Image 1 (cartoon, rainbow, N blue to C red):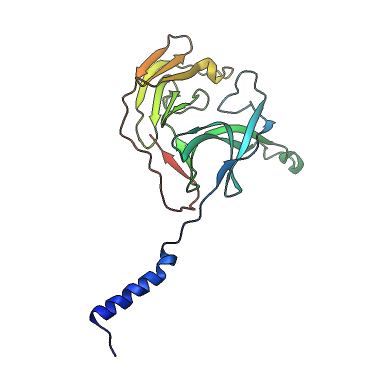
Image 2: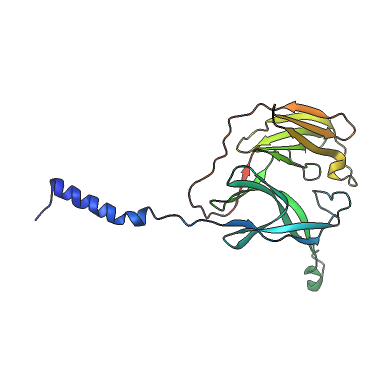
Length: 243
């Protein structure tokens, strides 16, 4: 006997309701946390980030997602929202030469500072940030809200700029020339430009280029909103370009 009309509709709805526990099953929550801090030998030679004054070692800690080490990090983390934070990556670099013997090659691994990462606690997604005009040797990033303030270098490497980048915004919020730049392999990052200083109300940032007066700029808050996915995404880390 063929069912039709209201009877068929009722049976169809019953089938949908019966499957609903499978269709709307709760997504598996992710756990994101840092491991214990440990000190490793730091390679000053060849590190584009440059060593800080008196620095001969680097403090690192593992970034774990669901109990697995995904990255190594250094320095403090900055909470952008209640579920998203940024932290700097620590890189273990192979420093062996092709002519080194196998036994010596195992010993030529060095730790150095790397780029900044954005981490979503809910999805476990780790995104490498590419900040505009960011130069590891001079750019000491100071975060406030979703803004990153630092001294940057132009592509030519001859001019030092005051830069404020905002997450999810392609162009820098601020990009003003501070000084001419002459590379000096002996200069530490803080010798080129001191840490920028933030002010909340009104929203201002002050830069301290070496050999010049401090420069203060007022930032007009934009309408950018950090997009935080609600889905369960197990895709590998990808790079996000902000310039």
